[in-house]
Amino acid sequence: MHRRFILLLSLGLACSQTTVPAQRTAATQTSCPEAASLEDRPPLPEAPPSGRSADFTLEAGALIEVVYVDANDGAERLATYGRESASRGGELLARFDVVGGAAEPSISHLGIVTWPDPTQATPAADGALGSTLRRRGYFGVQQSTPVHLSENRIYDFTSAWSIASEPSQMPVIMQVLGTYFQKIGPVIGYYGIAQKGFLGPHPAAHGDFTPHMMGLFEWERLEDHATFNADPAFLEHVDIRNALMERMEVLLTKVIL
Image (tube, rainbow, N blue to C red):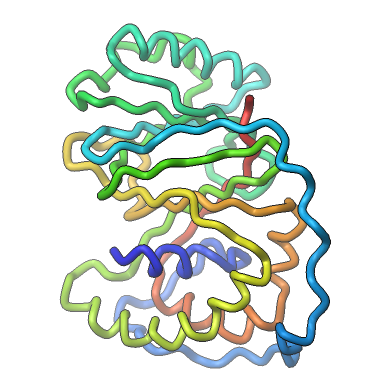
């Protein structure tokens, strides 16, 4: 899937579980307040200092495990799970505290573990996670991707299930997206939203959480997420996005350093 496709598909999360017929490939119009020109708007407040940071790389070919837990001590459990994974060749790349969004079942923390050897990823037991484990997904990246995270930023994990169940649907979808790209790109730039990673299914493993794609995005402030979703400059184009997806799920997080 094209990287710009997931970036633009993943934003505007007010309708995070919209269901549309598979044959719907053209947008209908939504009546929205008139959007002020982005050039005429004052800039957003300066972003807070980024604070401490962490860096890692999502390696092409590696199996990337995302584990989701629900527990008051979820951060500590993920740290222990990281040590357990290291004994089998894995590496805990990052832990995150969930601060917004919605998921079913409820999620309090999530962690990213990389497995250079995918055959080592299947655990005999979940050890430290125990009954707090809610689900896990296995992903990969097409290109090795350096990731820089900062403690005072918001990280948006957007999981998407596209309506493009067959390759023959993609030409029509991409044609409609061409207009969407032109319209929504300036709004993304105005809010300073940055893509940090794009993950797709890995052929070597399948967890119990299997979206077609997952994007990781950085927001400067938590409140920008709600403001973006209410922005007329986005809302006037939201039906195009809705016509191209079956379902989306969003978790807003802060990295644990």
